[in-house]
Image 1: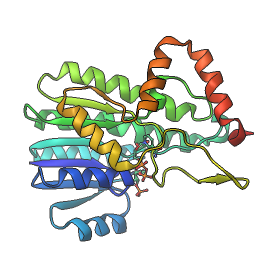
Image 2: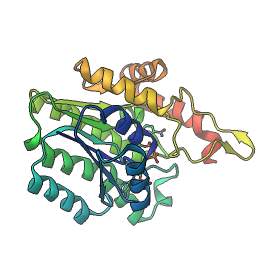
Image 3: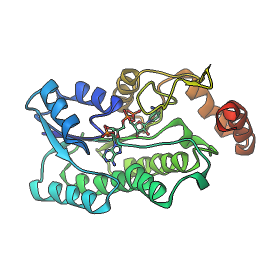
Image 4: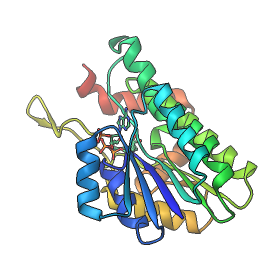
Length: 250
Ligand SMILES: NC(=O)c1ccc[n+]([C@@H]2O[C@H](COP(=O)([O-])OP(=O)(O)OC[C@H]3O[C@@H](n4cnc5c(N)ncnc54)[C@H](OP(=O)(O)O)[C@@H]3O)[C@@H](O)[C@H]2O)c1
């Protein structure tokens, strides 16, 4: 019985490694850096099977799907955790950067779900890491936000299509990981409201999964903003968002 965890070398990814390693025989730790995967193997031992895969490259994603089909493992967990983000107007991104973001955040997750589902028995789990930005549009992280809205919608549909397999979209707000670029800008502290640690995200996600939820939001602050996004027009929500980030995008 195995778990497949993408972005296993990242902060949230490693928390999933820690939490799931006792429940499975092997973890396919998917990452693009041989050295980081070797370090993970050194830390957690032979249950870690390093799987080198650059998820921004469609051919590499397809190779990984093919590996699943060839080996037909008994998959208890698929955690689509790898993701990339950057705050800037859309026109500041190169075509390559945008297309790579969509490959990692959406295409890889989608194709891996498709490849893994035939090898998942009743009671298995798909955990897709989205973001609280999935609940409303967010200018300046427009594509990232839209990519996570896709993942939220996709995961909830999967959960209904696949009876007996628990599919959950994990939608934390800010998480204190190396994805957040900096803690200061022009000498001022950057505010990340409602920020939590990676272990809180993972513990809450696994608890919510056991409860049969299809969405996990780990902090009261973001449960509240999710509620607001259902009752307040998104134009207003975007104005509030723009006020919150005005110091950082000027
Ligand atoms: N931090 C936040 O505020 C926050 C909030 C909500 C949701 N999330 C989501 O949480 C997930 C994990 O992020 P994190 O915060 O833990 O950040 P992180 O520590 O930077 O982890 C990101 C992971 O994705 C991997 N990755 C990036 N590009 C890849 C590629 N081309 N191929 C394969 N793997 C690749 C990274 O690999 P390397 O180690 O090789 O770079 C790393 O393992 C992401 O989906 C992110 O969108 C983060």
